[in-house]
Structures are given as structure tokens and as C-alpha cells.
Length: 120
Image (cartoon, rainbow, N blue to C red; front, top):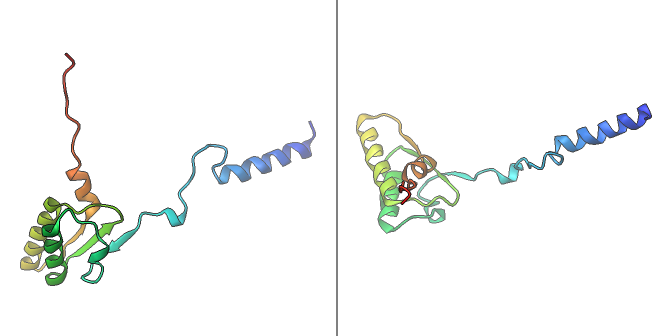
């Protein structure tokens, strides 16, 4: 084989490898990043809540405390998570300590575990 042909093949291989075309695994684009948003009173209408009680709890935290709450796109805020955040934020406000919460943490906690069933 010609040395020039080998160099050409390596060039195309490396060019495609950087794009992960050869491996079949695509890297996420910058546009495909997880959308994160800090909750404020003005953007609560963009958030997905389990029910109105959860919305009222989070609205109270955002309005009356200094807590920083971060929301991830398409994560539903459950009543259980909202209640935990409300309690922790009010406790931090009384102790005058900063409090930051992310709903991604609560989604992992609240995810139902698979039930173990012995084979019959």
C-alpha cells in the first residue's frame, strides 16, 4: 500500500472518530443539555407540579425565604418533595443559613423501587 493512502485513511478515521461516528455513540450537543432553571415567583407557571398544594408550598418558599431552588425540565414536583423543601427552607431561614435544593435529588429519592418477588 501507498504511504499517502494510509495517511489519507488515518485522516478520515480520526476526523470521524472525533465526531464519534465510528463508535456509534453520539455525544450530546450543547443544545441538548439538561435545561436548568432557578425558580422565582415569575417563572412558576413553567413548572410541572403534582397538584395545587405542591405549587402553593413552593410558591411560599420562593416568596418568603432566601432559598435557591433549581428545577430541571420535565421533572414533576411532588407534594412529598415540596413539603420536604418547605420544611428545610423554613428551618434554614430561622437559623439564618443558606439553603439550596435541586429537584433532581428528590426525583431520585422518590423514584419507586422495584419490588422483589420470589419465583414460585
